Length: 544
Image 1 (cartoon, rainbow, N blue to C red):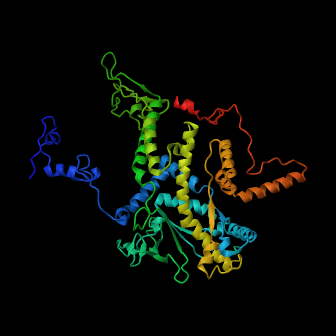
Image 2: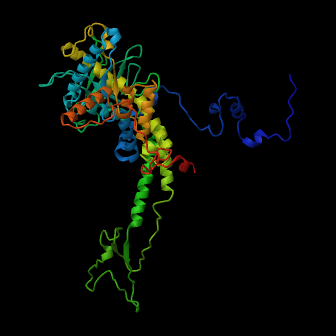
Image 3: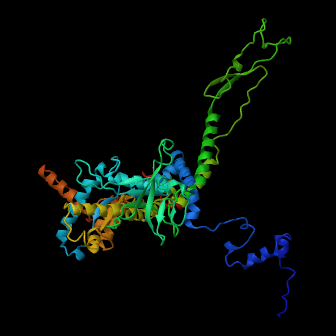
């Protein structure tokens, strides 16, 4: 055995520092754990983290999470603002279809491809811009996009069925039927199991192949008067393999059956912000009220009681201060005080000077949990141009990621189902579409144009776009979509129409076509691109 090391007298006594009552095994574990986060330090010892599966962590608490998420969006401004910011940044007024077929695989010329894409785009608009595409006949396809995406954010997930339902005057029979998350549940209250959990039925390999939809809604006004029934809907058609059910959710763990509301990590701070704001508002309102109290002496100078309880005949006397509602604060309220009572006013000193710093700190935490920069969440661009633009760019990057997931889960499958009906009815000619999966894939290529990236200084943004196109780093199509959200070909076509119309009236059309050199900016503007009217500080001012 080796020689026992000598301990210096100056070395700290570990047992003295931690305490003699500590268990030696705990101290040894503190230094033996490869990760500090796995050690039994005093600061971590009471952290009782549990082992559980994705469904085990979510499904027992799904109803509570959804209920609190619904309530937060209904009653808390911060929650409502966060959800609307995400809906506006990701979906906006709707994701617009731009067909982009694989013309090389299909052996189509450029002209043939352009004609096919224009025809398909027109046919899709015929269906999508009609509220009859909605099973409930309320929204267009773009309204359904906003509703489905918002439902996914708030509830955690959303379902869509794609039934065929003919209607007079409507060429296409495809309908989109949205199903709220609460309606998908286990039939007859069956407990979750490997076969069915959260209303999702799985096969022996753990692959989801059917959902169970409850009618009526479990929290409907008719829930106590109507017998509940469950409809089992296969996710894929048995013969065709076409999707019957679309399930919108963010998959965060392997084996996850249902989605988690995006507000889950921030529900507690949102509630605290709301409660604190309500308390501050109430205190400020009370503090602003003027209430006058009238004080009366109990006896006169001779000691005679001025306000006896009974008159000479023994009847009870009711005085103003005894009437219901007398003691009530209000703007300019008159309060009659009982003899001997005094009115003491307490200065609440509201609103508190610490309210705004606390509120801002909490909102920053909420924004961090939702991946929304503070400036974007608060709609407050009061810092420098660069800082504000960085916040908008960061949010747009996150919005693009979510938008891509939404396109794959919702918009693209519906478009592909639409193409199947359009080709089957002969409205769109696509040889081999119904028989060859590869040709179907080639014909179904598309991208979806959403809201354009926010801009602070449009002149700088346009200059940068022109330079990217000029030096081959981008295309006019990509830059037009990024700046305006429109399709480049549509812009060119509309400009040509405007030019012809102006010339027919004998006017000169002066619009600069996309890609032309922009006009030079005013040299008198500061280096940060500000003209003093946009409320954003110059970089030098911000750093100073």
